Length: 269
Image (cartoon, rainbow, N blue to C red; front, side):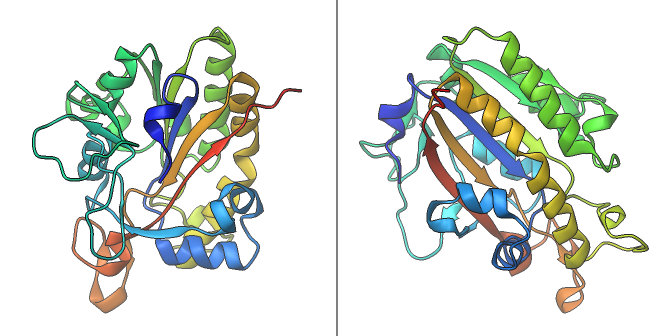
């Protein structure tokens, strides 16, 4: 585990959630060489399998923003990077960045961070009261149909928006950027010509597209400051395994998600 307590204040923070990405799709795609950019970022060049705290987007992100990121496999307790302080926590350690705040978004804002949300799936679309709950945690949030689940170029649009907003902020302003990648969520069959239904194959094609689209985001972040990054899925989804379809259900393909945390130094050039 990284020492988040020491890094907050000097490093920008990125939480990038690859919405609905299954562990097996992420791992198999990496092994097949279909996600070379992500592979260049991951510690040891591999995804870590973890358990999500929620089986669908809203529940998982509420937990993430409270400091409960996906949990390592195996018996705990497992120390956490971030925590909203509460009595009796057994997973806050000397390396945990704790906040006297209801969530880590407000906690980072209290440490001088500009909090920026680039939405993706419907729980970030601000079209309903429910769709405002999560983005309203942030000082600045964005959503439009071009970054939602139905646009085949959503990740490119999300990255372009994030890069533009980062460029508008002073270099000395620390940033907490949250980006919810929507391309992996259903529908993703449009990433395979001729496909009419979603499957692990079409999600893998969506992930390859995401991989090609991410480099400008990390280049922009590294131009600003050193970076503490967390990349993970919020949950997986079932494509007919044991008769199950979708998520918001208890099945290993839903609960097991890819996870990575790492630090990138600033690009001095």
